[in-house]
Length: 248
Ligand code: NAP
Image (cartoon, rainbow, N blue to C red; front, top):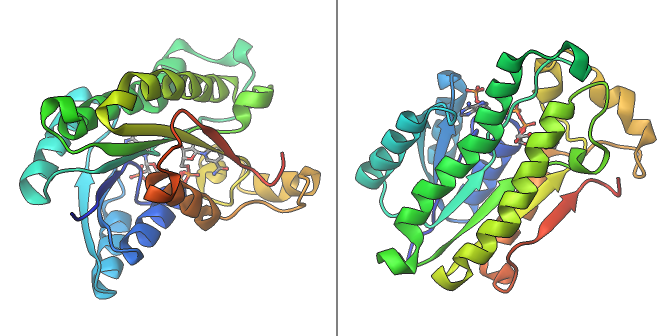
């Protein structure tokens, strides 16, 4: 049976690297994105030119109706989903809590936490053996920010990832008997555009000397870990939180 993987936030950074690698290894990839249609289409085209199968689906994961419609579109256009990578995530500008508005907190929790919950819910409806699915795998993308809390920068973001870790632990137990494994990767400092979007394009260069390996990670290094967790090589692993952080 063909693997059909939905990667949320698959148009950039870690999600895009995961999409490329998954397609090269023979999976059909569904690339979700929020707004950057051109980036998503570019990846779909590149994968197809290499002989792979890829489709782009626009949906803001913080919008429940949009997520439901995306899953219905995947059912119709691609086929039965076998894996979900809950990767879409945002950080806002660097601030202390004392300056954070409730609107900011609602947005980041709606995207990073509720978006992952709702995407997982829709994937389970299609993969769980108790609802006539054939099983599957979910990988949630957390962060090593859970270990230090990202003070003075993004404690809201770190807290959303703490929620993702707890979500992973609980959901893995809910679904173990449904032939769905649920794990999380926790990247450290990875060289993607997310740092610039938060207002500090040079953040990776500023921090990398403080890291044990003296370098940032590359998105492909996270992608290969995600794909390993999705694969049968990780068949007895569920509820794991795996750091991909160069020792941080
Ligand atoms: P990125 O390069 O900024 O890419 C983010 C992706 O998510 C884009 O495809 C973006 O699509 C999509 N996205 C954002 N909001 C969305 C929404 N509401 N609905 C659907 N898609 C949405 O980010 P990244 O660095 O690869 O990060 C990916 C994941 O890894 C995130 O969960 C992040 O928290 C986590 N992480 C990253 C690092 C790091 O250092 N980079 C470290 C730890 C954890 P559009 O461009 O269309 O908006």
